[in-house]
Amino acid sequence: MTGDAAIETGELWLVILGLGLGSFGLRFVFLGLVGDRALPAWLLRHLRYTAVAVLPGLVAPMVLWPSATGGTPEPARLAAAGVTLGLGVATKNVLLSIGAGAATLGLGLWLV
Amino acid sequence: MATSSPRGAFMQGVRDALPFTLVVSPFALLFGVVATEAGLNVLEALSFSVVVIAGASQFAALQLLTENAPTAIVLASALAVNLRMAMYSASLTPHLGQAPLWQRALVAYFLVDQTYALGAVKYERDRMSLSDKLAYFWGTVAPICPLWYIMTVVGALVGTAIPAGVPLDFAVPITFLALIAPMLRTLAHVVAAGVSVALALGLAFLPYNLGLILAALAAMTAGAQTEVWVERRKARAQ
Image (tube, rainbow over the protein chains, first blue to last red):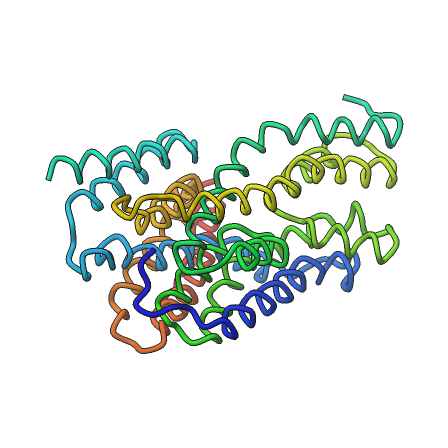
């Protein structure tokens, strides 16, 4: 990961503590506070799609405009992303997909 | 398999969780490496894993921190990744809701993807007493969660030794893509992911990574609406 500037220590700890507290709150909210009352269906329906709504949007710019090349699309990284995603959809095997993606990137950068 | 004592239930949990250590270890290792790359020291990387104990959101927060996104945006995006844990919490409440408050608080802290999935499957399948259910849960925690901390430290120590030429910048996208791919199991999930990508790219010009938040909200709604639409079609076809 190549950031432009170093992460500020104060901000880092704020994020660690805030994210920790928030995540605990999300895990505790029903188990600890709500009890076994049923949740409205519309809420559960939205919660089901949170991970798949955030992660692809986070990763897309990193794939298309990698910081390592100054934001220019780069064939080896695009190929690695394609292989990882394709193999992941086909096999649902996370480790295999990561390994194949990394191998593709290594090979691609070596060829270019 | 029937379990008759808390000890038996605990050991069953340990056995069921063992295969997941193969997934958790490299993921934690990678987090340690990436954290070091981003400039964190070993203590900071370990604190991240102990306090937050949720891989995908840790990677997301770290990435946004290196992009110098404002703290509020970092927190909102990373917490959005963890919203699914509220669903886990709701789903286990009928099974563990009778436990004492301090135990429920501890369960909540250790409620990660793997322990949740194992517990949810086991509790649906077998009739168990509350103490057996709790023992089973602690059995699944035992091999998985300590490993999460330990391998983060190993990664942080190893990370400094990795030569500069290795393209570690792309470890995060590859990891995320491998995590996203198995999630694309229904049309609604595919639609949500597509909307998320399209809007995140289209709104990338907005300041403070606000584009990502808007893209995520729209994608979540798109997924939920698609689910409703698919169910209506199915109901009509019958």
